[in-house]
Length: 122
Image (cartoon, rainbow, N blue to C red):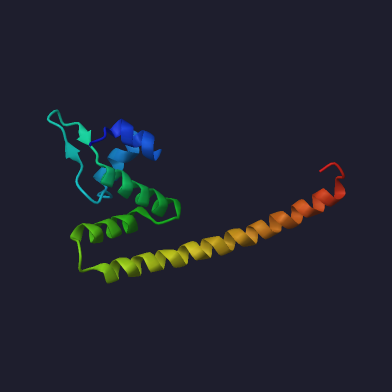
């Protein structure tokens, strides 16, 4: 079963423009198939891969690094060490972000506690 670009946009939450951009930037693990009229045809695998890209991007991975990871995946077996190293580096970045966000949350929680103590109706 194939999906149109509109269906993929709806399922992923990405805009049609962003899907075309991801394709141009080489961020899809497999080339997008085309119908006889040139319309893009996506597969469930494409949607799954886009889900990975969305999570990587949401976690702060820069597009060039996502492209590098995608290229490694496209090459197939034999470069798992490089993929692992790339993902471990990004994991460290995400852990640093989480630590920073937790520190921010502690400040906010402290301030909320102060105001709740001052305002009896809260």
